[in-house]
Image (cartoon, rainbow, N blue to C red; front, side, top):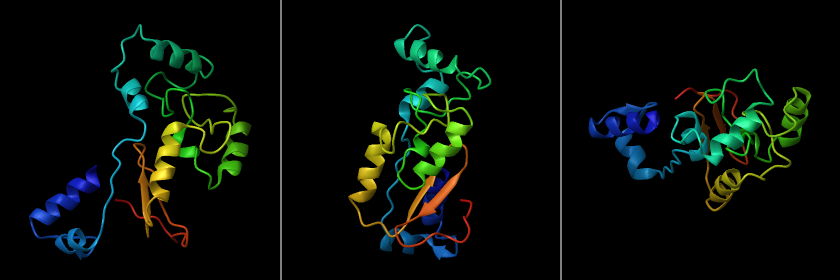
Length: 162
């Protein structure tokens, strides 16, 4: 959301963003922003759910298998224990090999890739959304400040921090 704030302020103040006039970007590009892919996970970490709720009971049961990960602050999976960042087809087999070797071979607060790519409903939604448009570029940021850029034709030589 920080990028949207920067872009909006640049537009209002007639400034540039990454060397381009913000007004030109607004008038000549389409920008789709999905602010939260994992609302249940955010609600868990921010304390929205009552302590006696079934969601808290279920996620605590998952977290008990990973005592080194603080609960709920270390949680970055969906509420079923699947890490959505690792759910997409590109590189899924490699991620599975790495994460399973690290002990994340079942639902966990983080790093469990799921039983297959695109098994989490949140990941399926994002995947289908991206397929429904002919995006020239897709940018994914996470709350942990990771940045992924890509499309079907290029792999960037370096990633940029927004």
